Image (cartoon, rainbow, N blue to C red; front, side, top):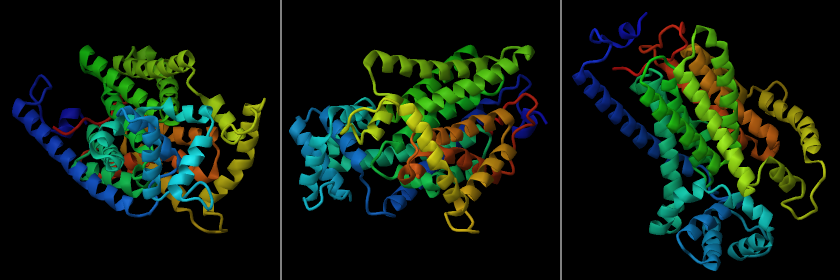
Length: 424
């Protein structure tokens, strides 16, 4: 079935008539506004599901955000301590009032530990303008805005893949109803990192299909690069692994298909992901930004309160060897014999839906994204934070289930590997 047959008739030159284009754009904008409204409502519902909205990491993000507004260091300390205590974080010092205990705890943290947060400024930069205008409420409003943006981008991704209004709104709903929704509603970097990652994926989708102009491909490649770098400077464990994984997967795909001729879109996509990876690694080396080795030292020295260990990588291997049997058992049956695991069932159904509803390379794009969640957990095997660390594993589930709902706008057969185009 041709593209025109699938998505509506077009003039002989293959381009939709101008009125059709205008109507499609209006429908798209209205659909995204509906996704924003739905996302706002669901975010608020998620916010109310648990009383604790702040965590120890929140303190450092809030302190950096208010410092960026020109606030003196001492007042920034007080601001961040008040915020996390009012948003449900218990005192880090037993028997000491929360604000005083939080300030004592923060003052005792070595500079090396603090630098892990100050060198990932994405979330703080996004929240700083809100903090400047609204004070403590600004952190909440900024986090909500980033989360709602992620919901809108999930809807946009489905539209770009050929889904309709219902499936795009389903993507927004799933993003907030699945475990992603909980962490998008906490005062942490996850909302920003997820939004930037989804922006990169939205820009990547059109590059997977043949056609387009050189200028358009370069603009899309620049958007992929910007989204990946935005995710990396917000949460390196998400952005860098995603950039590297997409580079590897699409470099292999590009080389496998080279006999049929180089596909400009695939080349641009691979190059954008590779540049994002190289830029961050180059900046990390030039500016001595804490990397994986430093975060391992942070773990094994209990936040640098003990001497550095000489063998962080062998220790990581050993830690993973001890971690994964129990973690896989928890995912398989929740630790209870013969108990069904909703986690595993949702993942299996979601990934099956992804490959059923999407052409090969589009499914590969989102499946690779999801796989980086597991890679993040391999790099940071910690049971208490496992659901947060694997967060992006739910993005292919969101897209797969949403696209499976859309029976009227199926992609064309995967003869050329392109995803479906947005409806005209």
